[in-house]
Image (tube, rainbow, N blue to C red; front, side):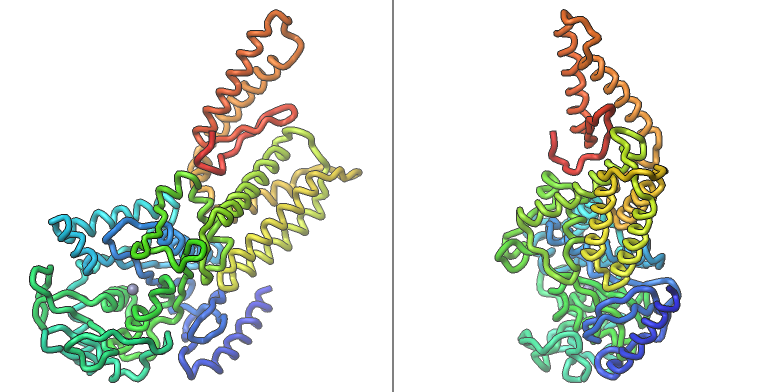
Length: 523
Ligand SMILES: [Zn+2]
């Protein structure tokens, strides 16, 4: 299997080297088991990292001037899935840095509206951003970097770009990047309409340092009072920690131009290299049916808290898994109904396996040989999917196929076979572990840490089963009709109380089992 992988990788490396003279060069580093789409190679290529079994990843973070919405959650959820695939499926040590833009026109405007300091606004929304991401179980970055805490690094970065002959100081003491002086500009995106501004030598030039306007916050610099341009922040901060080569750099597709184009140009100008980022990954947008993009400016946002009133973080994760990360996601009632139904299938499957393993309900005789073959096939297919540009939707299809074949075996009545339950335990274990690695069942993992929770719940259910059995049996005298009714009502109230706590009871033929609810809004 390793040999076939190496053959595939070497073939690919040969193929890619044909392209390398153009926009992208295969890095001279350490091949991984993962292939990834690279827009500069216009192909899916092997992920080669700078250091063995390690991946440095810079992610453009939020500009903190307002509350995050579902569009942000989807974008960071897609990258969270990719990060977990690298870390927990492929065992790669991912070091993720995320920028926090805490000085910007929009933050200044918001602070002026409130008559408060810009950092007060920024801190409030930064906190809200990380709280919201945590609520949907998106892992925090290894390190988050505030622009306002890296001003000295940014000034040093700009000075070197000027010294290298790629930047100039304008009459108003702003500093611009000279695009005409940098032949490799435009490698990420086709030429676009440039922004015009007084003081620039060419319309295509962009600001590295913005001279302060009256009343604006500022820092002192060799060129006068001002603040960093947006693009330079990421180049300077990423270079401070990762140096002259970044393995992966991510952001929403709207950041491709001008933000990432400018980041790449100014970083290459600083480091004197042709390729700063080896793999640019862009996620598609979340948009409402028939609309372009969910954004504050279009006033069509859905807040994360509104979403969580109806759905769970795992529903959002399912939705993001069902769509390739590079595609946009159309948010509608129908797609959420589909995501909810897929997530219920996962939960019901694990609950049915659990009932089978515990011997609750009818006990069919399953064919271990058939099921273990299905498991092996699914494991290979899913691993291939998760190695091929993070094909989460393909992996989900294979997982659902494995579950459906297992369910049909559980429902069959094979005869003449010894029943060991081994294959069902193996499949349930695989499904649960895989979904856990992909970030599902965060609440369940907390409960799993305390095996007592499981035991206490099961003991309570056993008591309820006995009480219910007694109430439904004919052993009680008929004059106890009222007592029987009260006992059944108490059993129903117990079930309803647990449902409100997120635990669902399933009454089966001769016993009851429990599972975590699939929706927040139940009962
Ligand atoms: Zn950025």
